[in-house]
Length: 101
Image 1 (cartoon, rainbow, N blue to C red):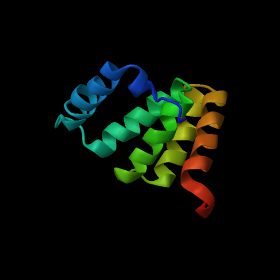
Image 2: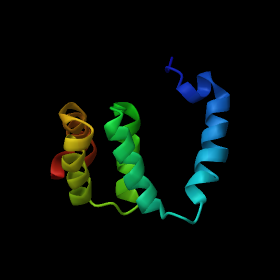
Image 3: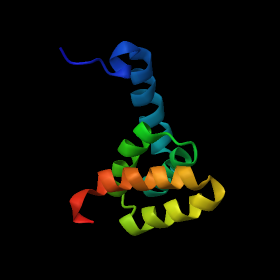
Image 4: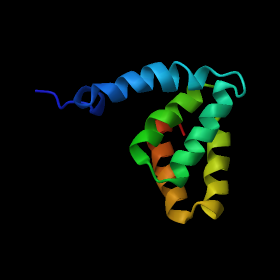
């Protein structure tokens, strides 16, 4: 039997994620999806939110953020969010970028 996701366990979280976060907030015109992705992975890096960072780092690549820009963000945040946060984001990048890097 497959383990339930948080969104299956708490269905309202999934509804809010789909309807409000991705259905409204991510669609606002003030920032591009690319810029939203860069902001999001920066915050997730600084907060050491590893599981969420994995998905959003891939989304950032899909939204046009380059691998070099992600590397630059990680290096920059090492000095503002702390070394462990940056190293953790580097580990996530290794996983997300795959063996082609």
